[in-house]
Image 1 (spheres, rainbow, N blue to C red):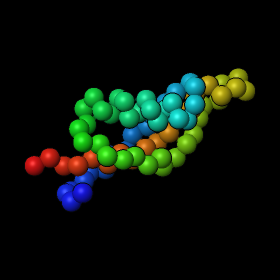
Image 2 (image 1 turned 60 degrees about the vertical axis):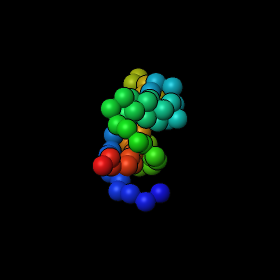
Image 3 (image 1 turned 30 degrees about the vertical axis):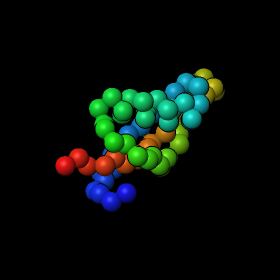
Length: 68
């Protein structure tokens, strides 16, 4: 697909899994970003509370086509 694309970076979180954190981030971004075509997971991390995994976090790059 010819065109010009922009990349934005964001962090998604979930108490369930890394995959769910990705889905949450993409779903939220889709409320304000049109023409999203791809994403790349840049980093996975999490939060530990009292010796247990409390939250999964993913840093994503999302690519979307610039409108003319």
